[in-house]
Structures are given as C-alpha cells and as structure tokens.
Image (cartoon, rainbow, N blue to C red; front, side, top):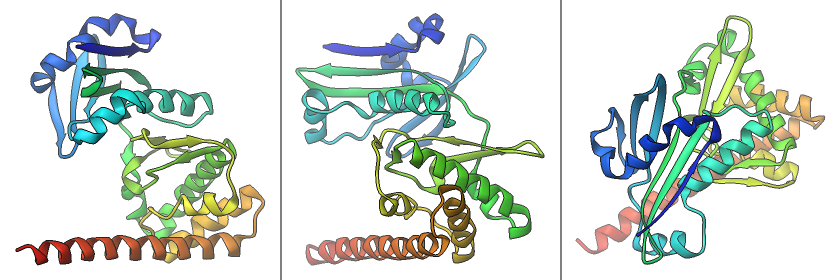
Length: 251
C-alpha cells in the first residue's frame, strides 16, 4: 500500500487530520453530496474544510491514475494553486491524498477551505436590471482567465460561485481537476463557454463585455457563443437519445 499525500505548508498543523481521512471519511462532518463524488464538510482547528472523495473510479482509470496520469485530487490541488497564482479566485487548497495498491489507485481525496460564495445560478435567475453588472464582471473574469492561458475543462454554471458586497462582484471557481494552461485561440476561448446554460440575452451581455475587454468584435463573439452552445446541446441530446436506444435493444 502506497500513500501519496501533499499538504499546503500554510496548513501543516492539519497534517494528522488529513492523514486520517482515508480511514475516517464516512464518519467525518456533514455529508453535502453523495452522488458520483462524495463531499463532506468538517471543521478542524477553527477551519471549515471541504473534503471531496472521488469515489467512482473505473477499473481502467484506477490503473491509468496509478501509472500514467495524475489523479483528479492531485490535479485539483495543483490547478487551484495555479489559479490563485494568476489572481483567479478558488477555495484555497489544503491538500490531497491518494491511496494506491499495486500501482492501482484505490482512494483519492481533495481538501480545500469552505467557501460561502453563492452559486452563480442565483445571480442569473434575477432580472437583467439586477444581474447585468454581475454578468459583465463574470465576462471580465473569463477574459482575464483566458488571457492568462487558463482553460477550465468543465466551465459550467455549477462550477462558478460569486459574492456581491454591495459594490463589487467577486468570483470563485470550483471542480478544477480538468484544466489546461496554455495559449489558445479566440475560437477556443469562446467555445469554452459552451457548457454555460444561458439565455440569448445573457449571452449577448456576457459576450459583448468579453469582446470589449479582449479587444474583439462583439458580434463575432456573441454569434460564436450561440453557435457553440447550440452545437453542444445538440451533441448532448444525441448522446442521451443514443444511449436510450441502445438500452432499448437489450431489454
């Protein structure tokens, strides 16, 4: 049995607790989500922590993560540090733990500080008069991220949190295990927004602000957003229909 553990030096006092997570996870704190990944919230030494257990790992991926690729927990930790280095908000990473057996990943945990920011869906549910400033701030964040060469592979509304203090908007990205750090084209940048479930009106606001701060043609950006969103939605719907059809063949 091999354990790969990394702890943020700022939280070295939590070393004993973090090392105990693989054995005690099911009894720790409060369960927040028990789906594909299990999430628990716990308070330790005055710090409120989020522990994410990447529970559902296929047999193939256990071997891949054990020999060829970094685990999701390790990538979440390293990518979150890179985001903060580039001035992009994300819950501060505390550490990760990967447990291996014969070069096969058995358990994988990521630990970060808890964020009290709201889901950006809350902002987008408000009328335009109360949400436009926030959407434009979000567009500026996206432009900043793209100009820094940061591509979030799962950039959807569930992975963006926000906070409004009455004057300014601040944002926080989560679920950071699928990220790329490289320079990319305008087309790739606009395509990165295809997972965002936005109305055409919201796309127009976000797209025009993104274009403005990026010194691009706003019409091209907005049209591109609409095109890629429709293409993404069609692909998802086709995939769902195909799965249902195939399952029906074997009933």
